[in-house]
Each structure stands twice: as C-alpha cells, then as structure tokens.
Length: 272
Image (spheres, rainbow, N blue to C red):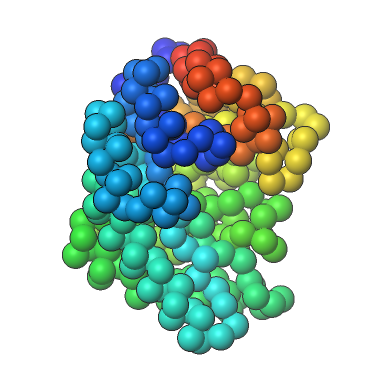
C-alpha cells in the first residue's frame, strides 16, 4: 500500500505538549509539515490574535481545534456554561481558519450513562446553529471505552454514527482516531456507515503492554494497530483531508521537539 501524501501530515499539538504554540509552529515550518491541530489551552497562553499571527507567519494550515465537548454535568447551569464554552471554541476555530472543532464529549457526573449521553446530544444541538453561522463543523471523536468514566461517554464509532444520524445535521460529523477504535469488531462497517461525515483522521499506535492509561500512545509502527488498513477504509469513504499525528506520551513529550517531528515524519511515511 502506498504511503499517504506528505502534504496531508498534521502535527496535533498535544504530541509536542512541552512546546508553546510558537515553538510548535516554527518546528512545523522548519520540518515542512504543512498542517497543525491547535489545542485551546495553548491558544489561551498567548491569546487568539497572537496565535493566528504565529500560525500565519509560519505558513501553516489548521486542520482542527481541540477540543470542544465535555457536555454532561449534573447542574443545569453548568451544562449551560459548557455550551457557552463550546461556542467560544467555535469562534476560535473560525478565527484560526479551520472548519473542524473536535468534540471530546465528556464523562458522566454520576452512574447514569444514558442521561449523560442525552446531555451530549442536547449540547451538540444547542451549539450547532452557532457553528453553522461560523462555518465550523463539529466532529464527534469516540474515545476508547477505558475512558468512559473520565473523558467520554461516547466510546465507539457506532455510537458516534448513531448520534450523528439522530441529530441529522450536515454540520456534524465524526473523527476517527485509530488509538480509540482499532479494537472494534464492527470498525470497518462503521467507517462505511460514516461515509461523507468523516471530519478527521488521527494516528498513533498501541504498544503492548500499554505503558500508561492516559499517556500510553506510541509512535506509529511501535504497536499492534493496522493503521494503513484503517486509513484506506477511511479514504474509501471520501476522507482525504489532513492526517493528524496525536500522541500523548510522557517520554515523547520529554524529548526534544525537533526529534519528535523527525520521528513523526519517518513513521508517517513508513507506517501510515
């Protein structure tokens, strides 16, 4: 299988968490990586205006903003505040020049997962008209089930597809992250079901044993995920946009960022 075009490569900023946005942008420009996925906490360090200035000065395109979501909360006022925060995230995405806001939908505040999934739907529906006005699409990213208690009650691509179809808006889609979905026996059926609604594709790897639950992602090629097969399936359903390398791993964070980008490019070419 042929390697993906290097022009599709995107640094998801969490991969170089110890770098500021300026360092990440300059690193990408130096390594001829054309895309960057921006995390909101990095934008907040320097402000939206300065962030856009840095990205533009380095000639980068923004593949997505991460993250919106976190909708479930026991208190109605808190749920409303979270919806407002998602609207701010939409504004940030529009200002930075991307049309994708990634949603990590959020965990349940209690043991009622059914209610929390309903709050997720309600939150998305509340944000969608605002997102449409700003030309930004919302991408539901299902997370691996081990994150259900702490990060997201949407844990399979099937759930994400069901939610997308239930809401029924062309402004809403799904994000396929191989780390979260590779294990799913229905993965390829659900990728096919997601046709024309896939808004993002994220890559990393799952090494054995997993070194850490949260910071456990590995560089592509160091684990068990059949990344090229998943990429080919996603492309078959019409997604040919940026491919984000998203690796949350303390050892990778601690090494020089330039080294990470060089490894990332090589692994992308060889294993994606």
